[in-house]
Image 1: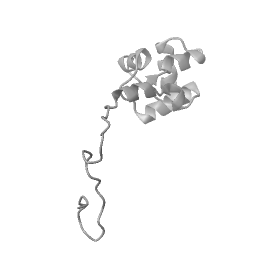
Image 2: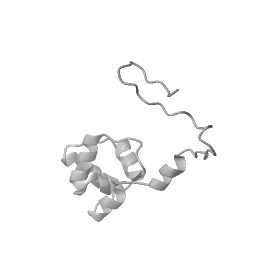
Image 3: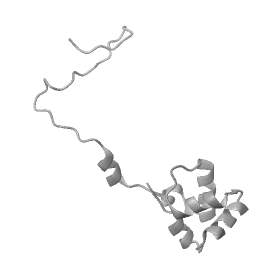
Image 4: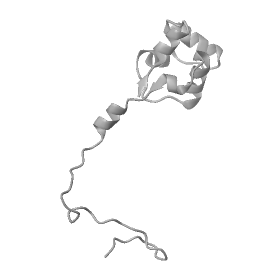
Length: 107
């Protein structure tokens, strides 16, 4: 995910983190200078949904405007699977057997 706070703030005429912090405070979200700096300067590793709700209210946007998906990064993290030449080398499919407490592979 890409964090887009500074661009959305700039679209609303907010150019400094101190101004954004003041507006968030007016809306009921008190952030420390360090937390505001982390939100402003980079991509946070986590954010509370309540905080995100207030940020969206101040910027008059929805979360999708602040969080931009990066599917190519997700695809790059996915492990590569080797194609199997025959079904014999593939692991057997497990199917549930009704009336029995455990699922077992077919015989």
